[in-house]
Image 1: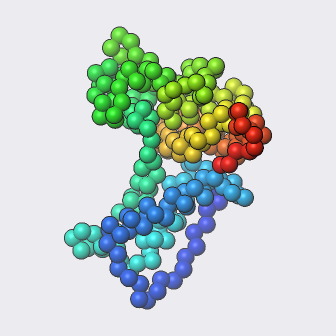
Image 2: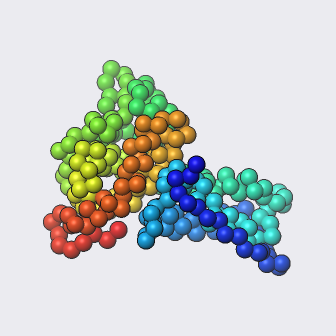
Image 3: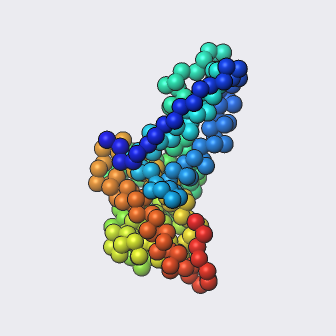
Length: 255
């Protein structure tokens, strides 16, 4: 069952609807879906779409683009199948751009979760992502010893962490600090922390959605719950952040 109420509205396609190429379809997806995703995840006057439903909800604006054409043609001239269009639409959710450290963490987490992995494999992946194991240790997202490496869980990150003094803060680290704050101090504590790093709000929320989807796919229910709880509490966290205000400045946060 869906956690959100999602309504798809159909309209009749024009008789003289044009034909589009696969490239044109993809270009329009990338121009339209970011705004649609922003509206669905932020919620506005409505509750945001739950992470568990996002892959279904994104179908609406994506298929609105696909179905406005008489056909979307593949490179060989054949009409694109609906199945292919749906795959391209949902792939959009996995194409958020993150910093190199976060990209490493995402791929490592997908491979081994919170378990230990071989240092050599981590080193190869880190280089491929434009970072290094030493840099990852410096950023506080991994522990490495005796030829093994593992990601730090949110419960293991330091409670006295300061985003103002941290010179290397990947989105992964900031997100898991937010989860720690939410679990240990509720929305007030999480909001106070968010007020100290407002520029990371959108990347953190995008990463939380991404990780929830990954955990659901892998069957990691406990981990999925942590990310889902952060997303569902986001409006309250933002309100608490506005009440706290930006550290060292006057006025309210603009999210």
